[in-house]
Image (cartoon, rainbow, N blue to C red):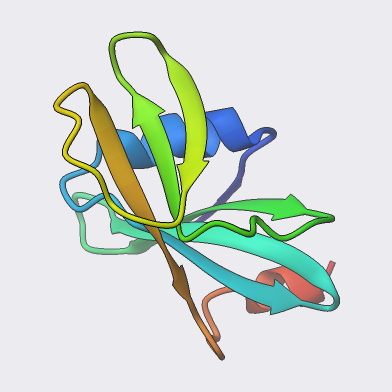
Length: 102
């Protein structure tokens, strides 16, 4: 199952409260695509994704859970109020084939 999210804020909040907060990035047909993979109760893959015109240039998205703010960093931090979400660069995947078939 695929879920296309509307905003970066939605994606960051979803990732920040996941057990393994990381955001994956790849390019599909010239579009910047950020996604996470999860599994449903019955074991089927769930893919949440966001398309953007521009690439995020930082290595981490920083979500402050107490202030509900998003910032960016090139280094992880130790701020206890924030979740540092690494952006993992994916060279190739078939998880997002549905995007190319629209």
